[in-house]
Amino acid sequence: MDGITEITCIDLSSVAVERMKERLLSKGYEEIKVLEADMLDLPFSNECFDVVIEKGTMDVLFVDCGDPWNPQPATVSKVMAMLEGVHRVVKPDGIFISITFGQPHFRRPFLS
Image (cartoon, rainbow, N blue to C red):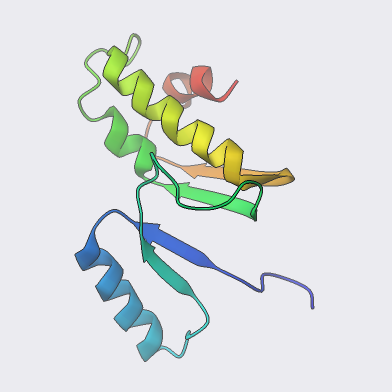
């Protein structure tokens, strides 16, 4: 089969997870998994995803960063934990997509 055959969505909020489950089921998308999970501590085995899409997580982690040119150590630790987790769960030939409102020059140092 070509294309995407398995989709797993995660959110830290149990409310968001329940609402997304309801929404997907109402549209007939029974095969999409929606789990409560933390991007800083991903509950998945190594190299299990072909694609990981992060939408807004970096934005949330940078909210209290202080100076975006020189983020606080706590921000750096959280961003690196997220990226290390993504690196662990994405397959060696996999793809990581980050969707953010943040300026690229503030994010690039973490992605190199």
